[in-house]
Amino acid sequence: MKVKITLLAFGLGILSLTACAQTPTEQQAFASLSERVQKESKGHIKVVSLIKTNGQQEQLLNGQEVYTLYYDVVIEYIKDTYKACDPLNGCYYTFRDCTEVAPSGWEAYGKQIKHFTKGQQIQLTNCKMKFDFTENGWVARKLYR
Image (cartoon, rainbow, N blue to C red; front, side, top):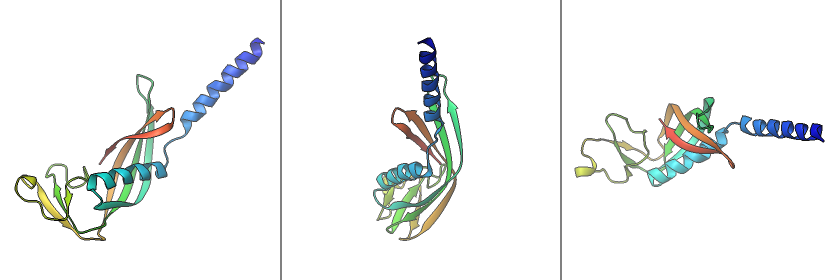
């Protein structure tokens, strides 16, 4: 009886280790980024492609499994868009501040206004996204540019 319990515990230990061994996929990153871009840009930008370039898994002091996924992405403007860009962080730190009319007044104060035409594609490189491991698998936490 003791041998069976030990083997069962050992087997469950291996099962839990292999469950954590899987890493987030490009498809998960694409879906998460697409949702964020759609929401933040209010439908002005879409994600065309995302390619994973690297990844790093780590365990935090509290035991939480975290995965950093590094990627390159191509985005496309699906309508003529004006974007108020932050002079320090650039245009793609966030996908907010997209409008069909050039911002003016306080909306534009201290920002660089750029115009993007419908169909224009931009490639962003060296981006990263963090995932947390939960009961339901890997869940995107934060996106960085």
